[in-house]
Image 1 (cartoon, rainbow, N blue to C red):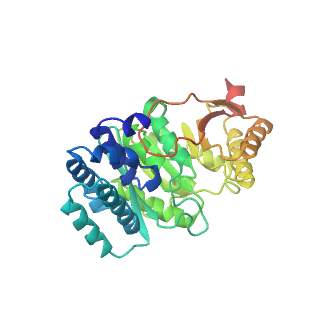
Image 2 (image 1 turned 90 degrees about the vertical axis):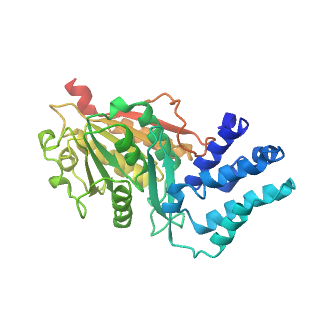
Image 3 (image 1 turned 90 degrees about the horizontal axis):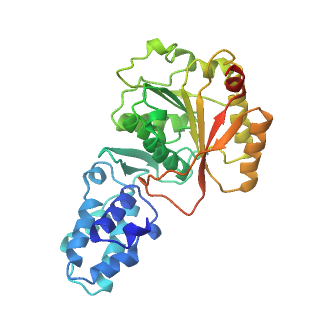
Length: 348
């Protein structure tokens, strides 16, 4: 994002807009570049543009971020304005006064702009980790995988996609809105996550049957899915308990997972589930499988590679993509592995 931060006012404005709508940490914003721009005669106009592209943006007005976050953002804008001794911007102070009076909610929103002009809005907990699960927030690998999907739409177009560990739903919603899959199955094992996931799916304009659809009831065959319209379902999947036939019943062409390799126990559960799935595909093509993760602990990553080998699952690292659609930590190393099940190699 360096070119945007040091470039024209328009690119600076875009950086602030994307970061604010996604409720990025304030320290990640290019404040120094903004202060330099504010020393120009057009500084007040730039601040007004930022205000209307962030706090006053229609997405933010309809689905606001945390009140605490908006308050801190506006306060920092005003600090930068006063630091250069520029003329006060009344609308900026009025916006701060308004948010100072607003009560803090337990839920907040993040919004992401897509290249198509569409957007994704997620309702999230104001706590980083809530109800004992990490599935209520959006992690870097999910954003990275969504960008990769936008650049590689053919992987998903007119295909049935099963996502493992969907969490808040960002990756799946991006694929549903940009890649035109035939059917998309969101899944997770935590009931609280599933409730919020369903809310986010509906929030973004997709139809969804009430409640959680069990595996046996979802699209029993490709012919049952309307190729002209997207079928979106949510199901509860416990990787330790789900059987190979239950996974195969979804008839997925593609399986994806993002940021699910955060503990040895989870890795063993995931590899075990994929290994059980491979036994159901002796006479047919197995799904393409893509797993995206941020390398936080090399030992955890090595365990995943080791377990894949022991399960007879081949892997290859996908080339880094060129898309930069979403704001997230770029210094963290994120990768996508394409997995190939044993049964696929045997049948081919």
